[in-house]
Amino acid sequence: MPPERRSRTRPDRRTGVRLGRKSRMKPDRRAGAGPGGPPRKAAPSSQRKPPARPSTAAAAIAVAAEEERRLRQQNRLTLEEDKPAVERCLEELVFGDVEDDEDALLRRLQGPRVQVQEDSGDSEVENEAKDNFLFQKKPVWVDEEDEDDEMVDMKNNRFRKDMMKNASESKLSKDKLQKRLKEEFQHAMGGVPAWAETKKRKTSSDDESEEDEDDLLQRTGNFISTSTSLPKGILKIKNCQHANAERPTTARISSVQFHPRAQVVMVAALDNAISLFQVDGKTNPKIQSIYLEKFPIYKACFSANGEEVLATSIHSKVLYVYDMLAGKLIPVHQVRGLKEKIVRSFEVSPDGSFLLINGVAGYLHLLSMKTKELIGSMKINGRVAASTFSSDSKRMYASSGDGEVYVWDVNSRKCLNRFVDEGSLYGLSIATSRNGQYVACGSNCGVVNIYNQDSCLQETNPKPIKAIMNLVTGVTSLTFNPTTEILAVASEEMKEAVRLVHLPSCTVFSNFPVIKKKTVSLVHTMDFSPRSGYFALGNEKGKALIYRWVLLMFKRQKYP
Image (cartoon, one colour):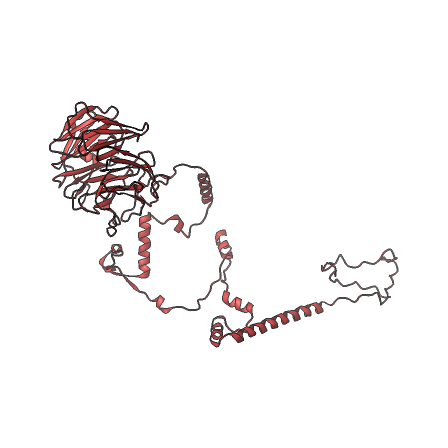
């Protein structure tokens, strides 16, 4: 009898798993079947199972797929019968023949894949980029007019004419104009910003910097310092709610000043009231109002430490001192040795030690800020128009009605230097910068001369660094911002006569004020917040306007 044939491997009907070679049927050794024993008898024909045919299953799958494709085509044709002929023609032009199957349509829409040749010498980064290549799609339609090189007029456009390098660039193509705009942007930003660098690759140092940034964001504090490169030209500024919106008045605003340490702004007017408001830029809620009987306020000012408010009137010699901690109003009726009939203009030294009162007949009176007693008096030729302290409180600057500037030593009360303000016939205002670098002098003809402080001390005829001639009436107000990046100049004799000067370029910002809106009116007083985030103006209509800079170079804190 021939030996028994091995049974073919077939799928298990219970689990659907195909049996391996090790799972094949083995002879039954208990029945005496073995390598050397007699062969086992074959099972009866009724108990024998026929072997499975793989061709039968494959044929069944093919028939099912063909039936599904036929049904899909039948459904598509049924839907196509309801569509208009124009729509069917358009779909055939865009997607091809409707008889194509969906797989072929998908391959046609994806387009050919980009073939990348392998190079064993490529770096890991390049190989990774090659593995992640994208499909390249062929455009269905191209507008020929887009390829035409259209020329852009540069000469007759007030925004683009400044970008011309020579007269031959009166017209530029769109590509050249785009490159020129990129150059202007990079010049203004000081280079290409990090977010615009597309070819920058991440290295191990980048990983370390990200870890440092994560550690930085877990702590609080002032991490951003003041920038020394404030861009010139256009200043991003936002108009906020009026400082005195919760206490409106129609009287002229005589003084507006930010508190040196708190989130507070003070507004004083000719209606005998001094009001304190909390600065938030939205509602500016009122904190307190102080009413002084028959005392129209000429000037009000915080002390250097912010604990007191000093106020003078237009027709009185009384100096009011309001103690903010105790809530007491203290009138100083008479200063021993001071023979002035009216006390109006005064200045407080930055260190909080001295009080300088501008008297009549060319006298300057130096008082102690603590005791309000007279220390000494100084005399200049002509009338005292304005005065100010240096940033270190060691010198005093006085502008006279004769167009001269006097420099005094505070301790010895001696005149250190005297010079004529160039082109000035009548001085009106004077201011010094916080960093001790600049002295600005305003005259009655609308010219503001900016000097170097060292030249004002050493030279008898110093030359100004720059003469600002953007005003045509007398300059009555001058204010440097705390970071010495902006100089505010204004005249109370003409509406909208206020300008912001960029330092150190000494150029005027072109977008302030907005002349068309005419919201500034006649400016009588100005001030910057301690960190230059806010700028306040007081006008004759009784409004204390507040503007906020939208700049990255200023410190981002709760109260800028």
